[in-house]
Length: 313
Image 1 (cartoon, helix red, strand yellow):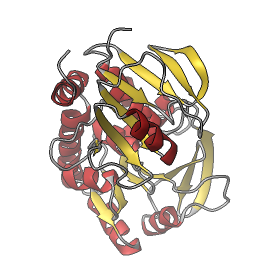
Image 2 (cartoon, one colour):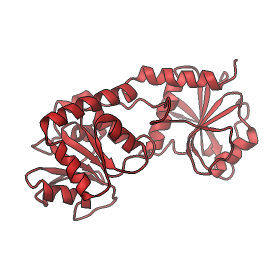
Image 3 (spheres, helix red, strand yellow):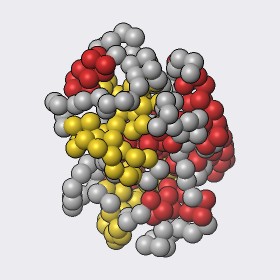
Image 4 (tube, helix red, strand yellow):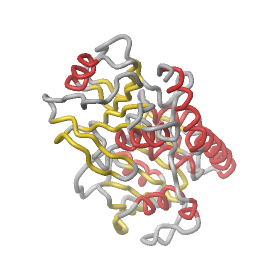
């Protein structure tokens, strides 16, 4: 390989359900439009194919080794700056280190966090959706305009999350759909009406596209992917009022945040007003499509970053 424009260290690369893996793969894909990209992952040394990239194993955690012949005169992008990865990078001393998540604090003041959401000039990523999801509702439900709650729990539960119970009690005539553990359950007046499995991303997109509002109780810590997907379909989002990308998306797109039950119910009630909901829907689409809907723009932003941080060939 000629000198790569970037080396991506993906500790979570192979975790299919990891939001951090989604973000890292997106960044690697965008970087590859500017030149060769090397992807390093923990595991047995040697190469293995993974779609567009050949992954290079760097040994098990605790025994990481930089591949022989791979230059350090380039930008290294790390998904998770663990103590083991930080020790490896401190040993080889690459030209530039950018990271997405930092488990060790300020390991090296010269290393920089790669901004994804909010702040000045976030790098962002492309968050794709399939517009066909807007044409047909989820096959398991015969209704639309429901209150969609993305749960913050794991495993099977007989009762809905507290937030969904509040909504179902306050809006007794409304359908409340709870997505939990890859199963969507429909509630009305706090009574369970039925369940369907959510087997594919298209199933999720259909649920997002046909909701009145999406209440994400546990938005992702890195980019809040489901919030962005909902907004790209014009569905307003409501999230807990705490630091993170979910709250940034909600406040920037005409959505809402809440601290307690009364604030959640007040926010949900505001989107029952058709005029207000239409205004928030348009604002959400514009925000999400501008920042996360243009793959060419994501490529340009990353190319600019690489050109600024990498030495001339």
